[in-house]
Length: 158
Image 1 (cartoon, rainbow, N blue to C red):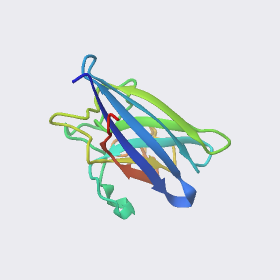
Image 2 (image 1 turned 60 degrees about the horizontal axis):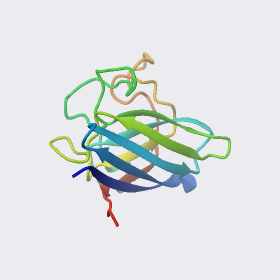
Image 3 (image 1 turned 90 degrees about the horizontal axis):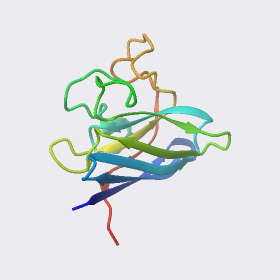
């Protein structure tokens, strides 16, 4: 199988809406994340995979960041020490829309640490990538409230 696809529909506070698609390339071992989220305040927003695909209490029931390897929070670009679910920040323009295009080697759609059935969460504030010195920097990136989320499911190839 060459590519596995997954999708999530994002919803949340104050008309936060969007969709994210995941494309795992089995040949390269990378997963491409792309999509669009609207209704955000302009600027950077923490963007993570959380451990639970549970939205019974909105985005608050999605649990902590997906961290099966028990590492500290970090940057997906610069750090080997990071949660599997750490995807850094997305940038919303002055129109409140974030266009997302991320390629990552840690998140997978199959295997022992699959993100299927887990949740994507968009936070109110920027992720400090574990470098902010705040008591939450090494666990959450001090990214603030959860303003949007969605559960990740397999996408049809049709």
